[in-house]
Length: 181
Image (tube, rainbow, N blue to C red):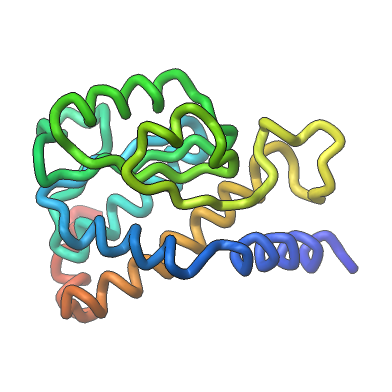
């Protein structure tokens, strides 16, 4: 099998292991939230930015932590965060801030037994190789690439679910896309 085939096979295996009920619960939390704020470090953060953009296209009040226009979180709101290796100090600290403000926390990780997971209202486990377990790892892809790639596909599937749940169309989403390109 070539590297493309192996990488796609690895991503497919990870996605097959994500529990459908956990995805459904995550979609429900997103759909019910007043304000959504996303956060992730490094390449996980880039995947989260893509999700937040699509949530905006769906008509939801979504932004990334650290952006100048990010609103405060409070009761009825949701902090969406990812820490594939489990413990990332900024993710854990921001989870605490969100909880203290009364917001709920949706936490994505490959390490669901970590301390940060116990702070979340819901943990969506993405059972992929991350930098926490990349030494001697079995993936053809380096470091946390399998986790990050799985996030991209997972988020796109979640957007499809949200699109249906919220009664959105491709046209209504496109109407919210920037015209400044």
